[in-house]
Image (cartoon, each protein chain N blue to C red):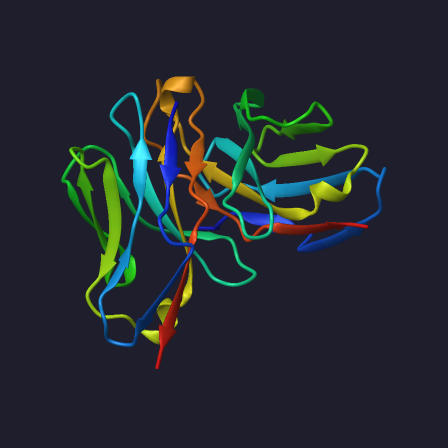
Length: 116
Length: 115
């Protein structure tokens, strides 16, 4: 069974640039959630994708956007980067069947983004 | 709205001593609760989860947690600390009633194990 993978591992950008982070979900999973973890903080929910559609968003501005592909992998895009966007970005995959289930989220190793 | 409070941002224990990490939650509906561990420069690894079955939940690496509805608590324990337990621990509650199955995390507790 392949776990959740994320790329790249580290990334350095400058203010105003755009970035794309990638996530491959665990085999058999159809839902991907993205979280931002600032230094010394707990992860904060950005949004979730289920069957290629956004299925909820946290308190993040529209310059944070995402995609989910037919193979359930996902991308997180951030436009107009700000210094406060520096953080560890975590992707979590899970499996949801019909209705709401207690699907457990399994996390990838994260992408460390530094904005200068 | 759901929320999680982890008391003690840093906890130190001696090797072989009891580990107790505290988590209190707030939820308007029966919660699902989780403990994750994060080693330096790594993602989150699931330790254990409570999903309304048994109130005492056993996880990996000898950890367990007890759901106490009357105290709105879900504290994490391990009888005997090992050096390899040094890490950051996060408690999380699911926010199912919001319509999105997202997790709300506490701010974390960094566990230090003293030789």
